[in-house]
Length: 132
Image 1 (cartoon, one colour):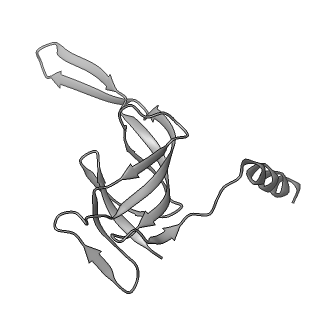
Image 2: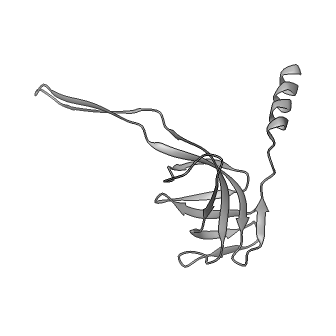
Image 3: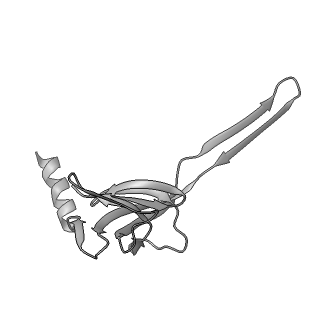
C-alpha cells in the first residue's frame, strides 16, 4: 500500500489513496473541486521509501474537496479567584474535508489510485444493508 507525507496548513499528514481527512481550511476553495498538493515530504510503500530534502521535487498528491465546514464549539473559560473576574469565549475552527485520489512519484508515475465512487452505488449499498 503506497503512502505519502504531505504538508499543508502548517501540519504534516501521512495519507493513502482513498482516505478522507480533515485539514486546515483551504483558502478560496469550493466543494467538488480538485486540489493538488505539491509539498510532498516523502512517499513510498512497504518495500521502499523516497525522502525529500526538504521536499521531493516533481511528486504530487491529487485530492477532491468534499466540503468546507466548522468544527464543534470549544469553550474557553477564564476565571480569577476572589476578584469577581471571569470571561467566557467560544471558538469554532474551520476545516476542509478532502478525499485523496492519486499519489504521483517524482517522475510522474501513478503510485496508487483510489477507486471511483458513484452516487448510485452508495444508495444501492444502503438499501441492501437495510433489507438484510
